[in-house]
Image 1 (spheres, one colour):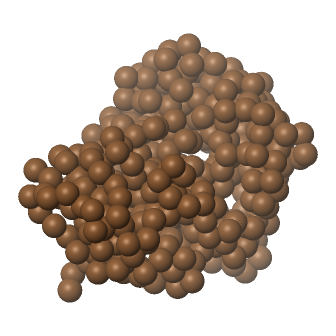
Image 2: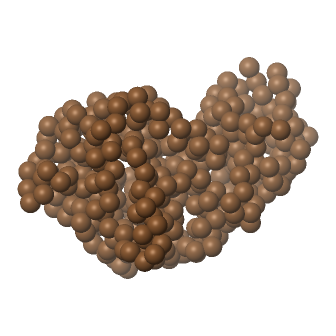
Image 3: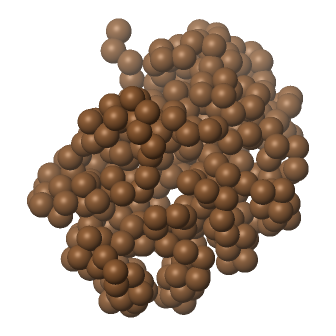
Length: 392
């Protein structure tokens, strides 16, 4: 089965061999999908015959968003905590413990129902690939069941037993680190692709984080890390040392952190929803781009500090508050996210890539920032199949 999308006003390919600028943009374009892959990209006047046809009517088409950082396995909500922050209270990692209690009390069915609802929201916002973490169970049983549920819905599952130290291990942090790096990891590993640690004040220090990440690497998991969200510490340097796929948050960076990232394979994943929801200082993305750092944008969807599934919202904030150009923001939310997951099959529209794309109800990707708060997603295609279509 083949499908052509023709009369595309602006096609963002993320392939500079196909089009102009960092987005590889083409005007008056078309593409062909065969089964689940992109089979042809070019001028709309030259499109080959196909079994089916979609006329984009001059609208923009972009790659599906790749959300490389989310926390979707949880129960409950923390709106009163958000209210308190909006009144001036400072964010700390301590609020995670209230979600832990709710998650432990939830059934598997309740956790999966919430995950499915959030996944549908992501699809409606144009996200076609997403990562999700455990981290709200913090027992061997609860971390394992969360990852088992997640693995049914995405291949990008991350073991985050080292989110915070649970209340029952207060004053016994080293014992909890040993549990995470031992029994908990052994139980969770078969449902995980990645291992992550919250390396920051109020969570885990550099030595503890190194121990946990190296234990996961030894079991075949790939490392990523929450780093430098609450303070400038050693998380980014540890990410580079261990060749983590990404260092996420990167709110507080020294010059040496930026230099280390620029000379590494580690992607700096920025999560503007977290700064928005916690009233924190936004990191300066221009500083990273100028240094040659690879940057991704992600939603960080979670119930405490960034309860959003809208990548367009994150793009708008990134442009307005974080020094991204519109081109850089879209690239970071698509191909940047793919690089943060070390995926070469998603994040771009080129021959042989997965047919993951979004038709916008707008003539240009610029409208993602130009029209903040408006859902411009008309149709979402993943692996050649429509997973969301706007109701007319």
